[in-house]
Amino acid sequence: MSLARDLFDRIFFPDRDVHAIPVLDGGFLPNERLDHAEQRGPDFVAPDDLLLGRDDQLYVSAGNTVFVCVNKAAQSPLPFAEFESNVGALALSDADGLLVGIAGGGVCAVDAAGKITARLEKADGLPILCPTAITVASDGTIFVSDGSLHNRPGEWLRDLMQNRPGSGRLITCRSDLSNPCVLAGGLSWPSGLVVSHDEQDVLVAEAWKHCLTAFSRIGGTPRPLVKNFAGYPARIVRGGNRDYWLAFFALRTQLTEFVLRERGFRERMMERVPSELWIGPSLGGTFDYREPNQIGRIKKLGIQKPWAPPRSYGLVARLDENGQALESFHSRTSGKLHGITSVLDLNGRILMASKGHGKVAEVPTLAPAQGIR
Image 1 (cartoon, rainbow, N blue to C red):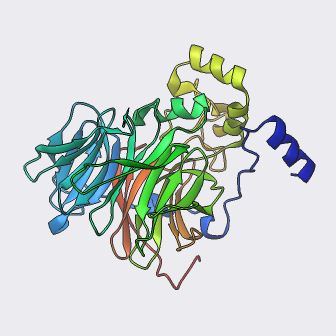
Image 2 (cartoon, helix red, strand yellow):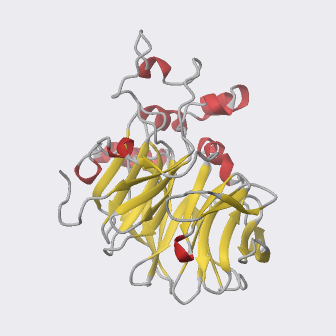
């Protein structure tokens, strides 16, 4: 894009995203590695987050329930705790036990018996409606990302299509969920966060800005790490080699970017069309004949094109300390492991939740020195 066009857009269209969607190459080179992943445990209904607790017990959030599995292979899941609305973000606190993000209900601390012992519902006087991720520093400090002041986590597509200025927040509190403080506001659906390896920063992934930013724990100017991902980032976790693992719940497309610029069309679509048929990303394909992109995805004989514009996609990436991709795992248009919302590093293997296809799956990683083949 020329400098003149860039300046024109910034002056007359300040809310327009002037960044082109980057090409998937280098560490993001497309492959089919996710489609060779092994499913762990039974199918779940829209699994959202994963947490490896003490004694290798795996916790899985799905619907309004947190399940506990006997081991990290997701075997024999049993209901551990149920809540008044859908749950998503999970974290482990030495002081409070399991921390759970509840749609419309903030963050709860849950003891070993599955009972709520504490709750954080507001920050700066405003309710925490949309807890999308939770992370805990080694000193017990808790960090929470509140995706939006207007929509709950399950309304992520509506939030994207509303295309309003970011209202997400980065919130911190003490280990007992007291004394909440907003470290940053105006974020565009902060969807993942993790304390950096040196514990100096909190890395925040913003889905609608497709970026990864380091926020200093002691304040100061945020430090951009990645300004323009090709997909919508979800949760991020630390890896075992001073790296990070980042899940992406969908890829960006030129069609969605166009719709986001067309306010009148977008508003009419949201008013008249069922949300599952909106032109936008999806966690998993429905294959409804009315589905957008249908003509671009399906051949006349009903065979899905592997190179077609993806409405749903599976993507997980390993990043270095500066946010650059070292390797990635893909499930392309015709794949069966889409809508990845969380990932765990298991020392040579990664475990992930495919919310779009209701699975927890595991796949081996590449050794750090091998790079991309």
